[in-house]
Length: 176
Image (cartoon, rainbow, N blue to C red; front, side, top):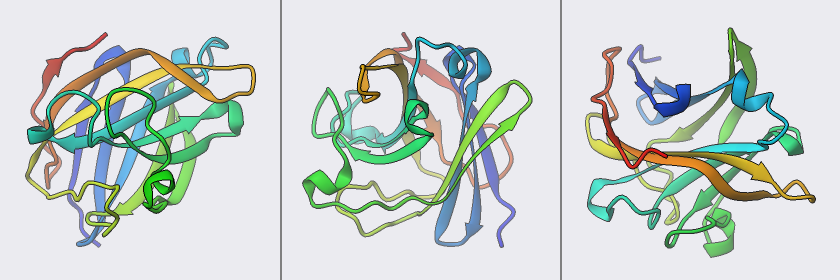
């Protein structure tokens, strides 16, 4: 088991940490403040990682959304453009999240999952340790059927998927 890890602070007190349980996997931990999670207005939060060369829009974004209105449902999504990112399998991709967990840590709800660095899924981005990416985050409300709606808050930041416990480079872009 590798001991490498990283942490990235996002706007609105959101946070992402990661570690490498093996040389082929990454475990991501998405921290959502209780002030967001326990607000009845909001019903979901999500994050995605995408290649810098694909630009700051959502196109080619590899997203995970967590819908707490549906008992913390984790969805694996892929965006073909700006807008609602459908499930990977809607485009011939596969659900590649495993070891899903939800926990509480201090004033945060922590949503965790493991995935391969390279899933061989054409609707996932392969991750390389030490490479720069955009990380995109969002949260918002659900409709009356408890399906996620357009985000109320979102942003894009540049970060490095580090291989140690140093903080990743922080550069805020387009935070709302």
